[in-house]
Image (cartoon, rainbow, N blue to C red; front, side):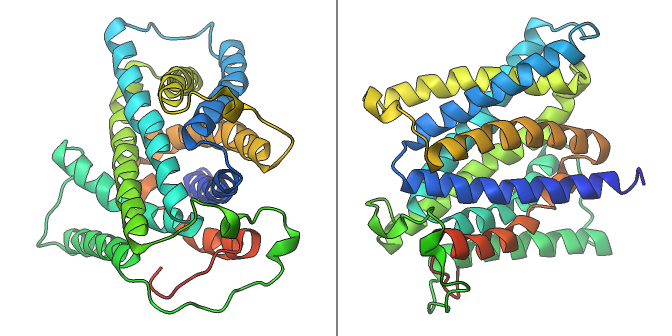
Length: 307
């Protein structure tokens, strides 16, 4: 049973990420600034994780050197703050399905970075090496297809999204308006995935210096909340845009803060420790089908053959 736990964990992680793409897109369609959204979700995660970390791991915490703290600060900046902020902007330009599909490049990007850092080996003449190269080509080719080829519209999978209350896409100025905007969103999503892959690859080494997983995750969330606040304040000075109400935006922030940033980041840290960053990255395609089905049902997104 212990051998199956990492597989069950990655299935759960990708299911939760699918919900993140859907609710985040619904919140952006509802008018919230993407940078403000990231700040709120990171703040909520701090309120959840920090008390747990202090209660469960504070007494047995390892020493935290200044060098390790700086590494964790940069790790949270690149892998969480910048990745989420760029992903938020890309999601405004594109769709939840595209966000999930583009994340399928994560295995290729993660493997490439791990290869550069000497964490993975590539022997092209072997079957495993050839399979890895083929997988990288397919991942990047799929992302290029999503970006440049639209294709005909497919019939909606469901027709009752009007009763769900999450679909605002047709009334929003930030809806997909042109091929140029779509392509821009695709490249931003790839950049976000690059930062995310860098986070997956580098945190394994930092964890060896600071092995308390819950404190490690909590510190990253705390630092990310400070970083994302500074970025949000720079891009959104109108305090009225920071106000929240009892709507889908609040639900999305609570879900992303508690479930995704809190629970999922901890699960990812555990999986990376057990099976490595590439194993976790290889599970990302699982979220695509779930996101595609539910985005059509809940958000009323139109699915085209290429996308």
